[in-house]
Amino acid sequence: MRDEKMSVISRTRRDILKGSLSSKNHHIASVLVQGWPEKMSAIKAGLTRLPGVESHGSNEAGKLILTLEAESDAGLMETMDRIQVAEGVVNVSLVYHHVEEMDDAS
Image (cartoon, rainbow, N blue to C red; front, side, top):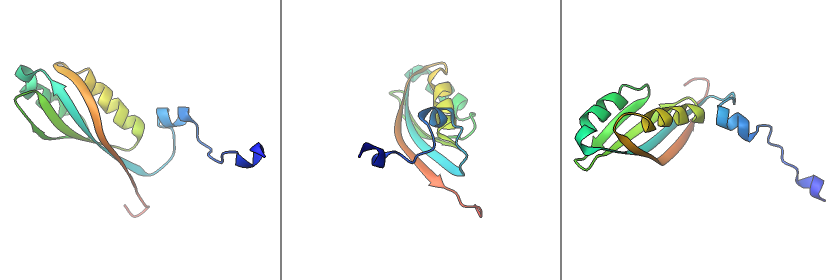
């Protein structure tokens, strides 16, 4: 009975984490960055130079809203890791993640 419920998924968790799945997807994420308020202009300038990163506002309390775009979830994680270790950044929180399936015409 148990054999009938076997999974037909051919990818592994490791494939997903390493981004080694061959797909034509476009990943978009929104993140909230908490940084030191006195370093916010430098943080914003540095982070928006990263590929696929766009700023959508900040405040004097040290919060910055960014969108990230990448071809894979591993690419998003790599960008988030780079943001986390940037000077002046205290924390990065994923707010939203969307995967857009691209067809051959896109």
